[in-house]
Image 1 (tube, helix red, strand yellow):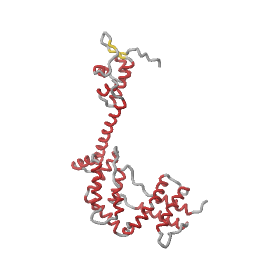
Image 2 (cartoon, one colour):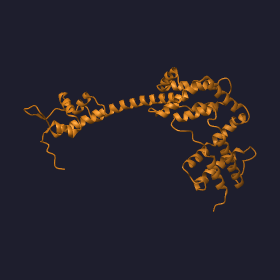
Image 3 (cartoon, helix red, strand yellow):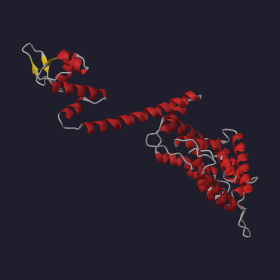
Image 4 (cartoon, one colour):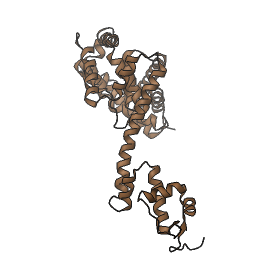
Length: 333
C-alpha cells in the first residue's frame, strides 16, 4: 500500500466508496453541516480530503450506534468526548435491553400457559415491580404462612431469609422465575398449602424432635462440615485423597458430638463408626433420589427463589461423602 497523499482531494463518488456511505448520505451530511467538503469545483462538484473522509467514517459508525446528528456535531466540534457519548448511549441501550427482557419474560409466560388478559397485565406489573414491593409481597406471604400456629422462631428466620433478589440487570430467565414466584406467593391456596406442609413437618412424627432447639443447634454445628463436603464434591476431589480425608474427619467429629451426653463424650472414632456413617449417607442418597420433583409447594418456592437468584439450589453430596467416609475407614495403603 502506497503512502496516502493528505493533500489529495477526492470526488464524492470515491468518498462514498471509501466510507461505505451512499452519495446521497455524503451530500446530506454536508448540507446538514456535519462534514463539509474541503473544496468545491467551479462546476459545483464537492471534493473531500483525507481528514473529511475520516470524519465521515466516524459519522457512519456513530450513526450505526444510533447517535443523533446534534450529538455527532458536538463530538466532531470537540464539545463532547466519544467516551461521554458512549456512556450516554450505553445507559440508553441497557434500559432498552431491560425492557426487552421484561417483554420476553411476559411473552414466554403467556406461551407456556393459558393466560387471560388480566394475567398479562399482572405479569407486566410484576416485571416492573420495585424492590420494596417485591420485599413486601414476600413478607406478606411468610406472615400468613406462619400465622395461626407456633413454628420454631429459628426456622421462621431461615424461611424468611430465603427470598428472591433480582439483580440490577436480570436475565429473561430470572424474570420468568420471578413472575412464577410472585404468582405462587399471591395464590391463597398455595399459602394455605405451604402453611399446612410446614406445620405438619414441624409438629407431627419426628418433627418436634427435629425442630427442637438442641437438634437445631446440632444441625447448625454441622454447617461447616457440610459446607466442606459440598465444596470438595463440587471441586471433584477424589474421595480417597488427603483433602477428602480431612472432610471425613470433620464430619465424624461433628457426628460423634451428636451422640454426646453429660456422661459420655460421644461415639468413639473407629473404622466401624465411619463405615456405619458411610452406610447412612448411602441410604440418604437413595431417599433423596426417590423423592418426587417437585416435592411440594414449599420446595417449589425454594426452587423459584434459587432460579431468581441465578442458580439452582446445590444438592448435598451424600454419595461423595459416603465414599470419602468409606475410604477414611480403610487403613492407608
